[in-house]
Length: 207
Ligand SMILES: [Zn+2]
Ligand SMILES: [Zn+2]
View 1 (tube, rainbow, N blue to C red):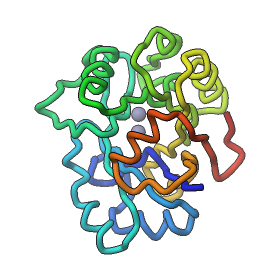
View 2: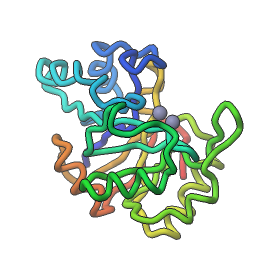
View 3: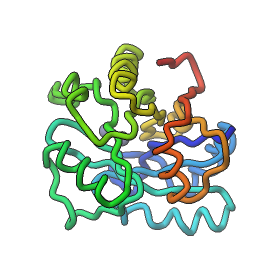
View 4: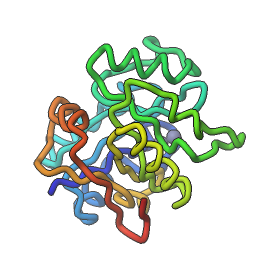
């Protein structure tokens, strides 16, 4: 078993209070085997984590979270910067763009409304080229996670878990359990496409 918290924000992304140097000690304490940092909009923001990973010997993978027109997308394996993709593009367009580049785009917290009350919701079931859906998000409600799980099952997509931590106590609240160690993004992408993983959580979160 190899546990990865697939969705974490740090101060480098400007909307979290997690200091980069605090991530590894907390992740270890939580029993995680790796983490994936997903700063907003720009892959390069998380680059200092490469050195932290090297110094600590703890696997820190880097992805990003993109704000599409209908909701948020986690993008693994394609290193998108602000110049590559303007925000608010239609979600299907971005999923296809990532797919063509052999990455994996995963709708994040698809049933959780944003601060304006809008969310992807049932439009999730119309999306194509999906390898996985975030079916366990540490900041979404149980009902929202269950709805995401139901649609992921209908789509025959995998379901991943991530804490969506914006503070130290959130780290490890939800994670994805893989059957073997994955310490490079290439290996993670391959595993995501095999859909052979489950979600797990620290507390009573379930889906
Ligand atoms: Zn989000
Ligand atoms: Zn997030």
